[in-house]
Image 1 (cartoon, rainbow, N blue to C red):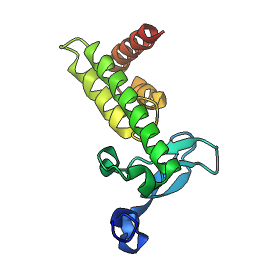
Image 2 (cartoon, rainbow, N blue to C red):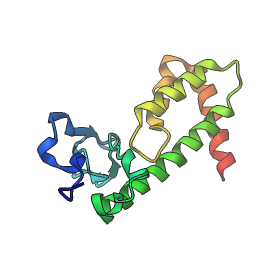
Image 3 (tube, rainbow, N blue to C red):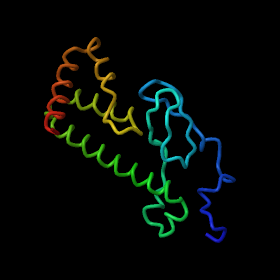
Image 4 (cartoon, rainbow, N blue to C red):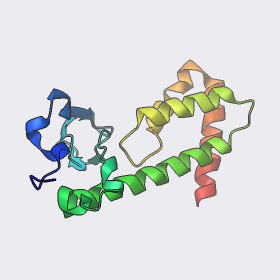
Length: 154
C-alpha cells in the first residue's frame, strides 16, 4: 500500500454498485449504504441496520486492516462477523430440529432466512404469519418448530 490507502477503500475506484439502498425491515424506509459502511440507522424508525453487502474479507488476514479501515469500521466489521456467525449457528440449530420428512418447513425457513440478511434476527416473523392464509398446515408446523426452537434457547 504505497499510497497509504487500500485501493478497495479509495472512492476513486468505486462504481455505481458501491452505493445502494436497503429496505428497513422494521418500517420499509429506504436506507442508503456506501459499500464501506458497517452500519446505518434508519432515519424513519431509528433501527440500526448492518450492511448486507459489506465484504472486507481482506480484513481477516491483512495485518494492516485496523489501520486501513480505521478503528470504527474494523470494530464494526468484527461486530457484523460475530452477529452473522451467531445468526448462522441459530439457523443451523433451527434446521437441525426439523424432522427429515418436513421438507416444506425447511424450505420456508431457508427462504425467510435469506430474505432477512443484514439483520440480527433469523427472519421476520410477520413473513411466517403470511403463510397462515396460504397454507394453514404448513404455518402450524413451522410455528411449532419455531416455538420449540425459541423455548430451547431460554
